[in-house]
Amino acid sequence: MDVNRIAAIVLRQYYLMRGNLSRVLSPVVWVTIDILLWGFITKYLNTVTSAGFNFVPALLGAVLLWDFFSRVMHGVTMAFLEDVWSRNFLNIFASPLSISEYLSGLVLTAIATSSVGLIVMLVLATTIFGLAFFAYGLMLVPFLFVLFLFGIALGIVGCTVVLRLGPASEWFVWPIPALISPFAGVFYPISTLPQWMQYLSYVLPPSYVFEGMRTIVWGGAVSGPRLLGGGCLAVFYILLAYWFFLHTYQHAVRTGLIARYSAESMS
Amino acid sequence: MKQSLQSPAMTRSKVLSVMELRKVYGDTVAVDGISFDVGSNEIVGLLGPNGAGKTTTINMILGVLAPTSGTIHIEDVNIATDRCRALERTNFAAVYAPLPGNLSVYQNLRIFGLLYGVKGLSERIEVLLKHFDLATFRDVKCGVLSSGEQTRVGLTKALLNDPRLLLLDEPTASLDPATARDVRTKIRRFAAQGAGGVLWTSHNMYEVQEVCDRVLFLSHGKILLEGDPKTLPREHGKETLEELFITVAREPLALELG
Image (tube, rainbow over all chains, first blue to last red; front, side, top):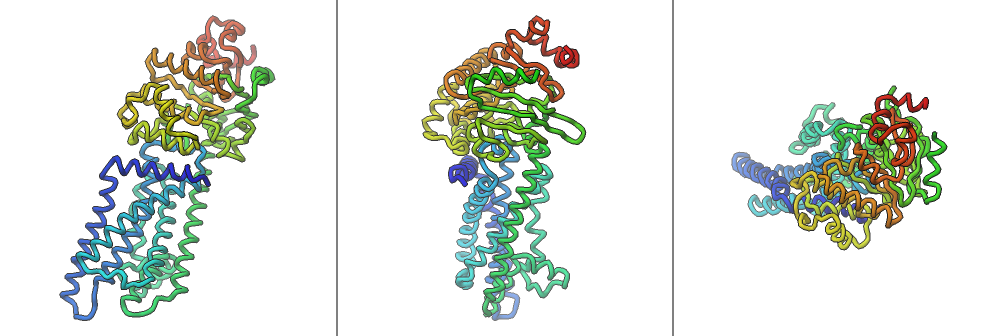
């Protein structure tokens, strides 16, 4: 892999963000709204329920982690969509750039954008609502890591869907995190779900993170092997998503889809 | 006719070798087993009516469309097996592939310079901006440039890596006559001075006659004619290249039999 070519993909996103404030503000505004909304809900719940249970680390912490995951996924997809919207596929894919370099560039961009969102959320949640984030201890690192990996995997899947079905299919991509959230047990234990939904939860890496988070909140110890299993599952999904994208790209090259993305008609 | 396709480029080193290239979509044969070369310092015109297979051929050479069969070598590198190395020495400009409009001219050139691994990129960009009279648009977003200015930016990008093979799909289509002439001069100079070769498509037969050392007439995915654009019309009983073009477009069978 060529570092300069990966840097070119990241640089493109940096130029776009620097040149248009809305690209920076948009993710920041949404996470701010989420933290404020859920922050006040948790404060209210703390006042109306019996003393002894603090909703802040359980609910607000869950919102923060879930938003981080969504931002990672959207970070990858947004960077890809920039090339779709500007009809840049022909220029990009007719260059020496390889698919692994291209995806690496998208992932690095997502790391940068999701880190900004994470910092904003942490500052707001700790300063305004007193979320003691480090109450999760060192487990915070694997929690974020597993969510990050799964966010990358889903982001690549989102890119693949748009590559295969065309620009209009981006509307299938945005709601993916919302579709997953009921199964991931973001706000409630997996045991709350009916059995068939629980089966699906077991194959979703975020469910191991949120179960682990709640275990800590209730004073228990997180099962290392279970969380490791969630991490391995996320890595497996990244590999699967990469294969899916590569396969779809090769199909697009065989059928002429890549060329048609830029050229309105083939002469 | 095909045996004569090899000869003009034989004396030069080949920058492009296309062998028995074929592309089939379902029942439609878009490109039907064509073979041709482009030599260094040579400008080859790829001519033909709409739907003849020109852009399909260019897309296959650029690696964005997989051939059904046949091989493409850029210099000695097979694009099917060593895509990145083959494309490092290639570049292209086409009216249907403008650079992203939400980035400035400089930003676009910087990004594509990195993608193509250009050494001394900053200096190269400044030289080309002056060369194509774009220095005043350096920090202007490409989307607000006129179509002619965008075409010049596309050509600047195409020359960034000093390619051995330059593909130009109707590069002067949106340019005024003075700028078009200027661009033709620059491309001729590129071909004459460096070691690169050019594959050029155009519907402007005057331009083709002025610029190209050799032309290939494509019709229904096949190469029907090949030769010097200045002598080819008379060889086939036509007054002008445009007349020959119209014959190829309307009565390709007559030429095939002839």
